[in-house]
Image (cartoon, rainbow, N blue to C red):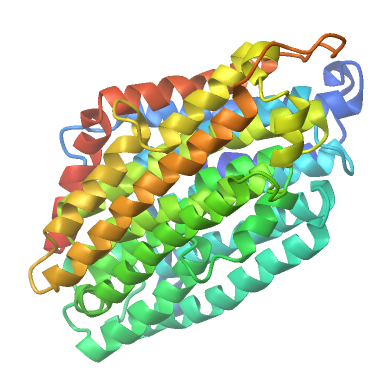
Length: 517
């Protein structure tokens, strides 16, 4: 188990280094470019296999216990250790990251984004995977920060070099926002480590804030929370996200929405909640208020983009929808209850599956029509994608209804649990205020249904294909291979939520009680 976790974390880094080397003559295939793309699929496939075996070997009877741990000294003067481990909170995120990266590598093998050499693309994709996986596996505050920042460079270049119109400005905005937030977060992490005398996240969680004064905890949560909120992204620190998604290549958008946004909310659960509980309790109402505002704001922005004549970009619309969906995650965390935190973790996974699928589908539409402009798509399809590419239209409609939280699909459970938790927040929190937040969240669900159904009606529905119009390519085999796992898992998580909640609940219960062992 220890070896498997090390392979999961370090494997992509070794694969990235190997991708930059010349391909052996026997493995070049038709060209060196094809060889390096095949290399990316192979490495991400091996990492996914290791993650699945790790999940199968995980002791599901004790998901609150850190497993597959590695703990060796690194910087002795600062007591920084290479400490790795997984529990019921981090394991689903590890598997999700490995799955989405493999699907992106597979998709890119057949549909490589236009840009510089595939060799650099594959290497950056693997470095991005390594940083994300390490964020979910490390148990030292300094290592967490390093892994958290490791993803910035590859994502910057994926947007700036392989993106679309406005990519340079969007990539620069992404780095500027996240770096500024990270500097503040680093100060909060250092404050905790220095005051507590250790950077070990397990030891800090076991103490449950003991040894840290309330003022220190509030200051630390405020600093750490600002850095995490930028990455989440929380309204009003979200403005980098729509530009980044609009400019990013398809696989960049899938990974940005599917896994990178989860790093921020994971930090709240793994660090802020157990390490500084008094600080979280003091700031939770403010976090909930910003979360509720983000839910409504994101939905209203999507409605504005979806109306006819608005020239709304469909990728930009889905990016704004992420602001609303991640608002539910933050609201669940801000209730400080097991129900809310479990709902937040479930919504994290559901959002990764559903929004990843949505960005894949929009990327496919853009490849076929050369644009993601909603007005152009509605006109170009004759408002009848069902008639021209029925499988593609059906998948788009499926992803839309999953995103709006239709019962029986993965998107329902996380939002429902977050709203239910807001109805009865933790002791000491202002219940009247949380009832307002719950009402705003409920309004957000209605607005979400409205704009997604508008999108489906405009793009998918209508009459038959006009005479003389060229045929439209329906779902291709490689697209089906990349999208089917996301569809299947969206249905499975919606029908059997206990599989995921059974992993997270014991770990959440123990984390909120002040411990991880």
